[in-house]
Image (cartoon, rainbow, N blue to C red):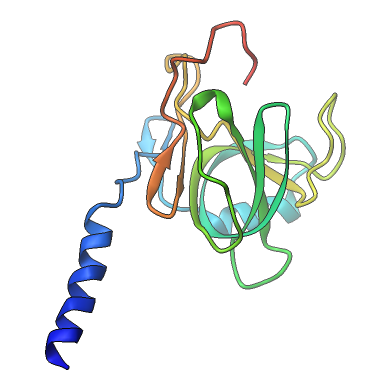
Length: 167
């Protein structure tokens, strides 16, 4: 019994030891903490197209159809059903695994309140999005973001991100 318990504990520690470290989530030169509560507040208190820096974590609760070279999925920010956000990942910044419900997600990027269409972009089914969750091909003009799924960091490949592409 003790041997089995020791093995289980070792296996758990070993899996976590090989998980990627999340990059810093920088906002105006400062590493920002997870701000799920702030994002929830923005969803209910800001106008459409409001923008800020978001750093969220939670389980994947829904996967939306991919389109235009982007993966779309929902994560829960709390136990309340309305506290969700749509994360949008640009596949030009690297491959990701098949995203599925239950994966643990963490993402850093640009938050936008999105309950109504804005220009060519449709409203988000979640009323808010987090995008630019990848390294910046132009870090001097836009901060990098990242996306982590089940302990692995994605979105750090800028080799396919040409300067004429819109992200």
